[in-house]
Length: 86
Image (cartoon, rainbow, N blue to C red; front, side, top):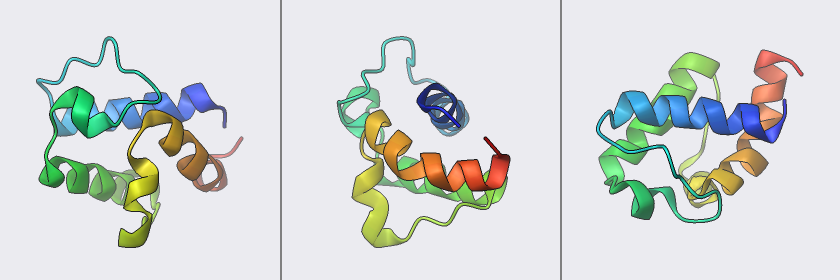
């Protein structure tokens, strides 16, 4: 699973959780919550969607690793590859 695929998955989930968010110019290295004006509940909804759709568990202590798209790629890439396949 490559970085673009992981980013597409994350952005797809954000589109569901925060349908009014403008995802057209999301920067990979800037905190998602800052760019998209999401609150902590939106973030928890993203984590819940990852678990529901892809069976990926994200422990609370790992939440900061999902702050940016780059962080999502680094953290979720190996986990999603194990679930979805390369």
